Image 1: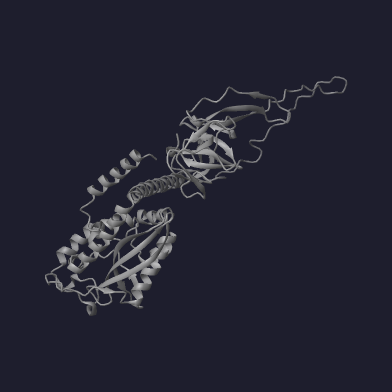
Image 2: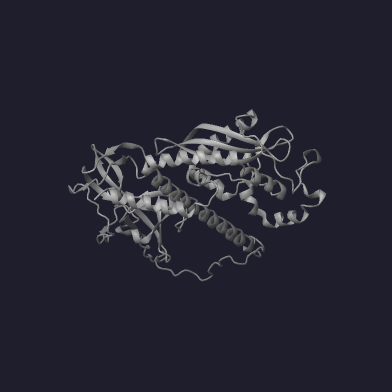
Length: 459
């Protein structure tokens, strides 16, 4: 990527940051894409319930906690609470386990510690874990919560990304409570207005503002010393958003299909509802005597039906192979230019059903061209087809064509930013072109083997 392109990307993420500058903890939004936000920011989850509780806030029964855990009065001023560091082993253990589960994408474990995550948050944790190597540094700050055994927790973390070498600072906020067995858990669904107001007031206290400012300054200093970090985080956020959106769309599609199948199953008539009377429906034997011809019955040979033709198609571009005829369906593979498949059905919605690894699969018809046609019988004839239409991609294996590297870039073993790194190509390097793919990657020859580089870094 040239200097101008890098500057454009940096300006783009800076503009995005300025639009979100009013967020209380911008560090959380930029760095910790997986967030457990304070219940003060989460109260609109059940607006009707909160509104009802607000109406009851001045009544004795408004507090939704046992008598021995009485809440402060609604109009009582919250005292300046001490900000403690790593003061409660049970809270530290909870946070260690939580961050470890987030880094691994272990949603079941995360939910066991915070059951209030919705499906979008769960998907975001799974996707984010693909880019997190771990949290090697955690510091847990706490203030006493509104009821006994509760804590306002602020975790200062250092995150290690898989695609970035330096540790990136960040902070997340939690409301932690203690259950009847003495175990700590994250209470991400609290909606009592008195508790929400208490948390809001404490979060605005001076020592917490100082802590947040210190971490923000550390983060900004890191950005100033490495301009590519901002662009990396901006791109990562966009990638996560796209992945989560696709996963949500897929889930909705699958749910709709299941509902449709259930409705169809309910509408199907039961088999064997009525029995056929004996003798009915059976073919009647002919009573007419056969014609005699020397004692032999004349047989008329019927022509055998022609064997059905097996149509072959080939991919004209690098394209995803999916489990059904939808762009949100599961990917079951990827076709490369020239790969051949048996065509089972060409549908009117722009998709073709093919045979792939012993199962039915689907490819967009626009990325296929007829390859050959053979009869189903052994020794059948094969008819060559017209050449595939050009899709604007250059497949140049063996042609000697080369591409030039525009800026230093990783060379990977597969067409993925998570693919194994084979080395580093430098600006001005010329590499043999194999094929420029439609998915944004270019296949090249690198040190005698096939490798992949992002197409934007080549010319």
